[in-house]
Length: 123
Ligand SMILES: C[S@@+](CC[C@H](N)C(=O)[O-])C[C@H]1O[C@@H](n2cnc3c(N)ncnc32)[C@H](O)[C@@H]1O
Image (cartoon, rainbow, N blue to C red):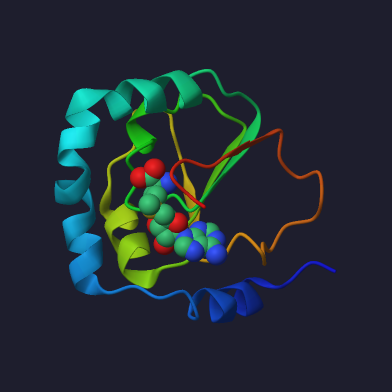
């Protein structure tokens, strides 16, 4: 059975995090991104099409690489502080993400809603 958005958000509230870890996330990854993570993100994400869901989108480091004209792009991030940082990011032109707070285990969507699922650095 599919959970409601409210149930998904309640489940997301159980995922640990803090304002500090959300603020430090990108500085912490800076060297890895410089060393080439960004290229790997670009390669993974730039070719997607149709309806796409990204689970554990974090602060949105994949966002700059999504192509324009997607049918739908849903960015799922459970942790409230990271979701706030994500919500402040400016997407590329023609990219209109919906940001949803939910853990990957409780997504408020029916089966077969999406063509592509993206996860990066999410265990
Ligand atoms: C290492 S970060 C990766 C963030 C982003 N995908 C990236 O590549 O930069 C792991 C992310 O998974 C999220 N996360 C933790 N538990 C999760 C769960 N149960 N379902 C979905 N995402 C979760 C965290 O809040 C965090 O944003």
